[in-house]
Image (tube, rainbow, N blue to C red; front, side, top):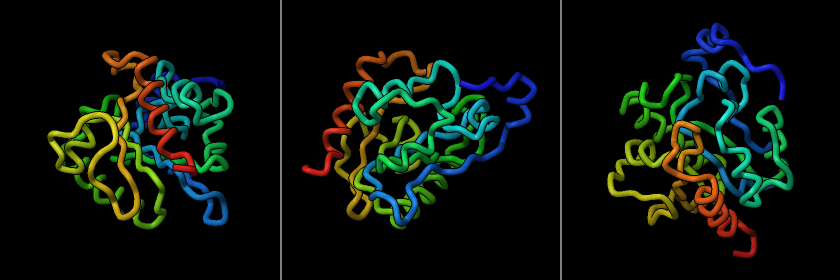
Length: 188
């Protein structure tokens, strides 16, 4: 992993946005579109999703069988060849997700619906139950496969892999991500 941005660089990244990671239109079909809540300051400073040290996204993605090896955040472009993508519910970077307003999450849900309609992933995987509940108006939602669909796209809510979300163990997260991976296999 390259040099991490210092405190000043992270603070200057506040409110920045980062690009989605998506397969090209001529590339493989989008099997799973992972949707984070919003970029953290380290992610915004580096331009790489889930870049904060301690974030368990990349290890859990690998251990659950989505990637053949552990990818570093700077290798996020390699997901496209696997039919995987990353976006965010709310585009602006903050130190913590609780700095976002409900209105921002609801607007992010609208943008996400448009992205899903345009790209038609097999699954939309939202990492963060609270953001999903707010953005989609589903106060009773729980982690796992949802009854709702967006067109032909299934929705799966995953635990937030942030190191700040300590009540989910890495092993439990691997299990839940693995359930989604099995559902996303082409034979199913």
